[in-house]
Length: 395
Image 1 (spheres, rainbow, N blue to C red):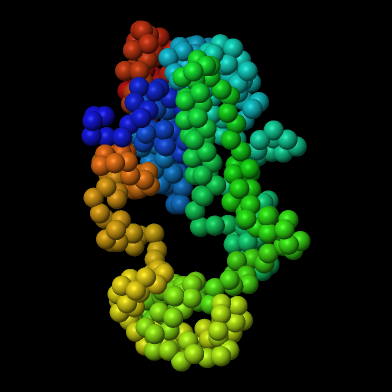
Image 2 (cartoon, rainbow, N blue to C red; image 1 turned 135 degrees about the horizontal axis):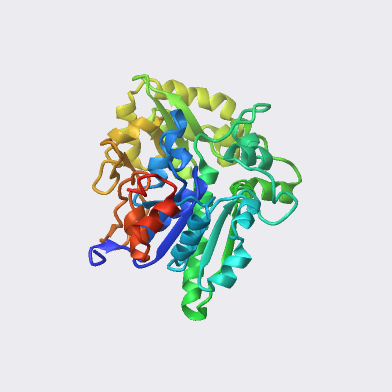
C-alpha cells in the first residue's frame, strides 16, 4: 500500500487509552499517517460511544481506522495483559487523571523504566504548575484564557463553534510523538510527553496577549474590534444569501469599488490611503451594503473570484456536503459505523506528491479486535476471557 499511499508511520504500534476528543484525536492523527492504533476500551466500550446530540459524532469521527480491544483494567488479569500489549507498542496515548494512572501502575516514570523505548503522549488539562490537577474541558480553558472573551460580543463570552482546543491539543500530541519517534531513531529511548489543553488555548490567544504586551491595552472582543481594513464585513445580497467580503489592499480597494459601481470613492479626497478609508467606515460601509444588495450572491461570487477579491458565502456545516471543493476526489473519506450506517468526514488537510493519505478507515465494534490482538500476544482463550471482562471473551 505504501507505493500509492503516504503512510510514514506504517509499522508503528500505538496503544490508545482515552475517551472524548483530545486523546482520540491524537490517536486518529497517528492512524491517518499509517500507524496501527489499538484502542483499549473498558468492558462494554468507551462511554463516548453512547453520547447523543452534539456528542454523537465524537466517537465515530475521532476513532476511524482503530482496532478495539476490551480490557478490564480493574482486574489483575486485565492489567497484566495491558502490560503484555505495551511491551509490543511504540507509543501510548492516554488522557487519564495522573492519580488514576498512578493507581494502575502506569505513571510515566514507571512506564519509562519498564519500557525504555516507549513514547507516552499524555493528553491533559494542564502542564506542570499550580493548575496541574484541575479538571479541564474545552469550554473551561476557553473561558480561562480569554478566547471566549475575544469571541463573543462585549459582556457575553462565547466559546468558539467547535471543539477547537481538543482537536488542536490532539494534533500537538501527535506532533510531539512524531518528534520523539524521530529522536528515538538515534537514541533508542522513548519520551514522556505531556500536552496541556490550557496551554494549547494560550497559543490560540497569543496574538492578543502579545498585543497587550506591546501596546499595554487589552484588545476588544472581535465583534467590537477596531478594524484594520477598509472592507471586512458580512453583507446581505439580492438573493437573501449572505457573503463575507474583504478588501485589504490598495489594489483590492480599487477593484471592489469598480466592480460595485462605487468608482467615485476611489477619487474622494477623504479616502486616500488605507488609514483614511478605515476611519471612514461608518459612512462607506453602508454604501457598500447598498451596492452589494443589488446583486445576487452568484453574481458577486463570479465577479469576486475572477478579480481576486476575498469573499466567502456564509455556510452551515451541513452545506459542506454540497460544496464542489469539498466534493473533489479525496475531499471526504467514507467510514462505516457498526450497525450499517456510513458517514463522510475530512481526513488530513494536506497533500503529499500525488499519493493518497492512509485510508480513514471504519469504526470498530466494541471489542471487535480483542481476540485477534490478544491472541497474537500468545494469550489463550481462557486468558483472553479473564482479561477482557466480557462474558463472551471479546468479539
